[in-house]
Every structure is written in structure tokens, then in C-alpha cells.
Image (cartoon, rainbow, N blue to C red):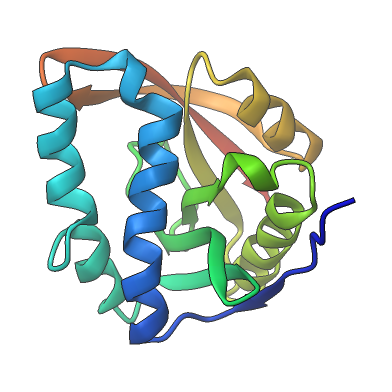
Length: 176
């Protein structure tokens, strides 16, 4: 059996530099087959390149991060932000688990579970009454995982990449 031990850490700048290509890889492996190649590459560059949206969020003090690290390598991460999803009537102090991603080779090892526990505990520490996330409607694995952690679907939103418009779902967990 392969060694599946890992630790969680709040990433510093050196971890961010390792995190960016891993985040791009996870997103690409999960979703690239759904989109036109050029539009997908442009999106990834805007989000995952140094100086892109992910780097800017890393510099934002209102955003909390946690990285899962195994043998010195990033194998997953979670990002907790102020609420950005278009939720209907959210509590004023709601937060969003904007990203929780794990390399496919680490699925089923407890990494996602540990990252989710961190996100919920951090949201509670920040006195959030509600924790939101969005999920691609056809991502059944993710929806099953979120259901196990007490999230429920409460709305819809659109995710636009290139000319494709996807129907994403807004999920919420009551924390109070």
C-alpha cells in the first residue's frame, strides 16, 4: 500500500508557487474535456498564472488557505473567501468555500475530509452563520461529498468559460 500520509499547512509564498501548477493540473484534469481548448487555456492563464486571480486572492487578508502536503508536494488545497456566489438572502457574515480540490491520485485518502474539516472549523472560528460553495451540476462525486458534510442545494448560478455557460448549483451549510 502506498504511503498516504499528509499534513495541512497555511501556505506561504513558496507554497503558493508550488500550489499554482497543482491547482491548474487538478482543474484541467477535472474539467478540460468540457470546454473548447483555446478558451480553457486562456481561462487557466487568467486564474492560475503568477499574478492571476489565484495569486491575487493569496494576497487578500480576507481569504484563508490550507494546503495538503505529502512528501513536500502539494496534493490538494482549500480556499475560504467572503461570499462571492449569488446566494439569495445569505446571512451577513457568510463565507464561501470557493475551492476545495485534491489530486485524483489522492482521492479517498482523507485529504478532502481534512480540508473540509478545516474549512468548517475556520468558518466557525470567524463566526460565520452559513458556509456556501458552488458545484458543477454534473459533478456527482463532489455533490455526494458535500451532502455528507451537511450542505444542501439552495440555488443556481452560471459559470461561463469561453462560449459555454454551465449551470452550477449553490450549496449551503448552516453553521449557527
